[in-house]
Amino acid sequence: MPHKILLLPGDGIGPEVMAEAKRLLAWLADRRGIAFETEEALIGGAAYEAEGVALSDASIARAKAADAVILAAVGGPQWDNLPFHLRPEAGLLAARKELELFANLRPAIVFEALIESSSLKPDVVRGLDIMIVRELTGGVYFGEPRGITDIGNGQRRGVNTQVYTTSEIHRVARVAFDLARVRQNRVCSVEKANVMESGRLWREEVAALHAKEYADVALSNMLADNCAMQLLRNPRQFDVIVTDNLFGDMLSDEASMLTGSLGMLPSASLGATDANGKRAALYEPIHGSAPDIAGRGIANPLAMILSVAMMLRYSFGHGEEADAIETAVQSVLNSGIRTGDIASPGHTPVGTKAMGEAVIAELDRLNA
Ligand code: NAD
Image (cartoon, rainbow, N blue to C red; front, side, top):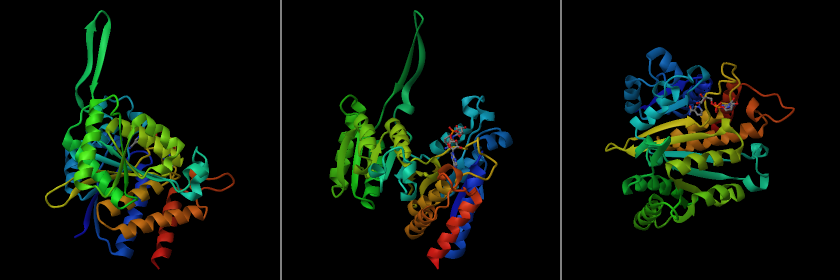
């Protein structure tokens, strides 16, 4: 059975980097015999212009029917003044909500060839390989009550509610423990158990699940403020970090900057596994639509290419091909081929297509 994939190119550099994902899928079909059935749909500003909404019901239905979704990027200044529910980002939020993607996986890996791009010293980040698992559909961004109320005397009150249940904590912790088992077998669970009840519950429930099902994995706990500090002081102490929506939002951005290069970082968002063993999943680079360089064919496609590798590993069990893609990216960087965003002084950068072709050439060499 072919793997059914929905491609959402989106806006700005989205279609440019998606073209390199398609090149890679064609190579995998042709040279590794992995069959894909791909469809394309609009999302973001492109969808708003053509369909009046950032993600149509028809596109949501196609995303649900697919085995995996690959999204490039959404957004652009021309849509900045639209009401919130019509903005390009609303398409992204709708996809997450409709597919119930509760676990966001963000690897932060430092490639040796790019070690100078990090704002930290090479000795601190050399060999860094962290996976942050962020809870994505609960917590303070969704909790009720919420809102701004007038409380008289010229005063207003803003409220958001941090709330988690046992099952919400267990399902995301399970993803983290399962990942740790195929990595370095260590999970650090991060919250503020010292000042927040929801944090105390998080810590207790992660510990309970650990004792019951994952005693073979090393579990530690850390307060979120300490984690923010430790990520800068000694980031290599971490293997898998699991945390809530709010802390995960910040800590994953912080960790991504340790690597110094936005155009290099992939991500995966996973939902629950259904009765047929199918798990909803969306793969996307962490960068946005980069309107400042859109249409010029110079965007770095590696974050997108590495997102395809994550899809092969987490949705389709093709770990060997995922490893090959990551090795190919590493070799291309080692050989000095760079797009503008990661180019070192004195080197002529290549464009999006040439970078995609360089990865394919390296895959051909590895596959020979
Ligand atoms: P951005 O990630 O689009 O760009 C930040 C900077 O990084 C820019 O200078 C850009 O040129 C550069 N950059 C990003 N990706 C690159 C790549 N692959 N190759 C080379 N350079 C790259 O973030 P921004 O400028 O804050 O936002 C631009 C638009 O993207 C906004 O509308 C924003 O809402 C949207 N956005 C979307 C997503 C998403 O689709 N998931 C994420 C972040 C921002």
